[in-house]
Length: 113
Length: 114
Image (cartoon, rainbow over all chains, first blue to last red; front, side, top):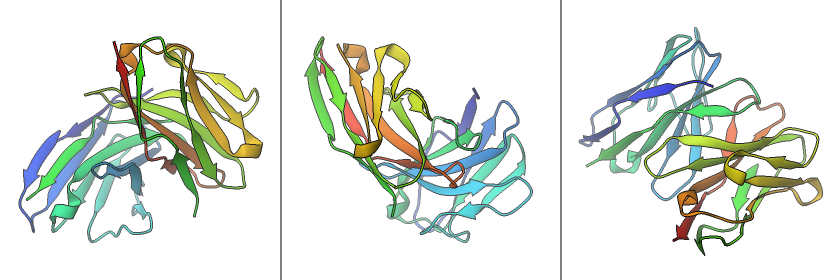
């Protein structure tokens, strides 16, 4: 298993600003993922954070809006850029090994006014 | 597009009642199947998983799920629920050849009345 922490746990931001969310894992992991959970909806994968290379984004998500860094095997950041109220969601980091289960962080609850 | 459907969005049960939550997926290939649970104020955590072998899998806290390949289903069951089972339950799949991408169902909120 893995223990994952995220910062901040929640934030309230103004429209047009950006927020960077940090994800820290207590052990080295190959795969790190970022998900979004919009109010009343399920979790949707934003991107896979790759160590040493660009993140792999899912359809509907772009690097300019959600830049991701993965400087090492225990840390990643997700930035939500030029925010609008539609970006209000819970953002979750997870880690996993290929086709096996993933372990999730506590999430960052973002409200955009 | 591949998808996961959970039939029940909100379920209310009394303690000791039996639980069955439906989950169906749309994909013709090999899948790994998961049920996750999120208790109030806690992280999403794994209840159980199925990769291969016996289609009836047992997880934590008395939960079990049955994989029926012909029906593309992976329903979650518990014979007797407790108040502490109040939580949100998510069915999810990983498709073969789609490393790491979990596709989640919409989630089911279970409320157990004491």
